Image (cartoon, rainbow, N blue to C red; front, side, top):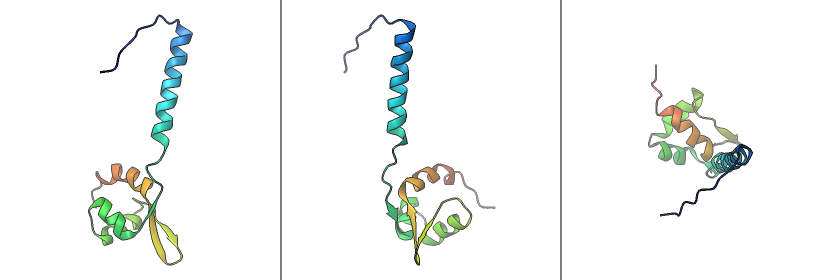
Length: 92
């Protein structure tokens, strides 16, 4: 268990300490997992759905696809973000 030491801080010192801690936390959070490009098959495995479902989600605008020549790829970091929305997605 980490040792906790209490200090007497004035208001400005406390504000600076909090601002620094929040800034560090936000920087860590904003860094994407891996900005790796995934194939349709890999994206389907990520969501545990079929490749056709991944294509349907891309057509519906739920996930972004990147077309490179004749190949379709998906950014892993974007799939992580989209997963939050897609889990709640109900087709109409």
